[in-house]
Length: 380
Image (cartoon, rainbow, N blue to C red; front, side, top):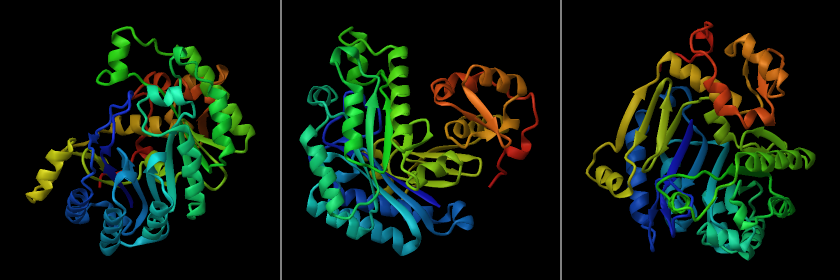
């Protein structure tokens, strides 16, 4: 089964961030390890274990998981393996900020079982990093990559953000070139989104920042797509590209709608048609687990219509697409004529231009014009 651990701690909130994080000068690593291992013991009855009793992929996201003390991270991974074996080829990913990466930490991470690192670069431009409230410098990016490579990390992903305000004068193609020069196995590209409860949201409301136009963001996305394809990457999902053999297996499991277990504050899980989520705030989560209570904040069983929406949306995010039967013929024909999709082998796949319109395309589809029951998962 897929297992996700949400590590909420950050040294500072980025200007665009609306995630469930806890800004702390000192990371409470031991308290986090105690809490997440206590929840892990509560989750041994998850229905997904019946079909997949080992951990096929483990992902530590956040927040900033690299801020955890190495000994706490080691204790967590030992505790997980004590109850459920890791599959021999398990992908074990740690999200890291460049300023947290040192040779000693890399050695500890690799010894504990980390075999993939997702490095939060976002940009190589110093002014942009300062505007984003990032805690690392441009120089620390290259130093982090060298330390990771020297320590034996052979599967490295870099994150970049596009669609920044024009006033920053960010040179997107320069950032792409510098990322390619570091020779990562994987790249994740995310559009800047203005969320209301963030510094960026407040700057925008006050008129201090004018967001990039949709056309500008689309141009940067398509430029990146072209660079990726010509550079030997497989652009296999809306926001993700990889060298052959290095697609993110953990995220691919989400897009295939596999069962997964989420641990930590705000973490989500799935079992069949049931979706669940934990208490969002760290202190509320910690107190619940310390008292022996289940930190789950809510759950719902998706209807057939919701499952259909999920199947369409997640499938069309990827280069595998969806069975053509999930999209009525008039829509398939129109999308193809516009250059937004292509058909082959009984499947419909969006192009890069179609991915830019993913939300609108899926929203335009009817819920009940065809019988899609054979495409829907059964209840757990």
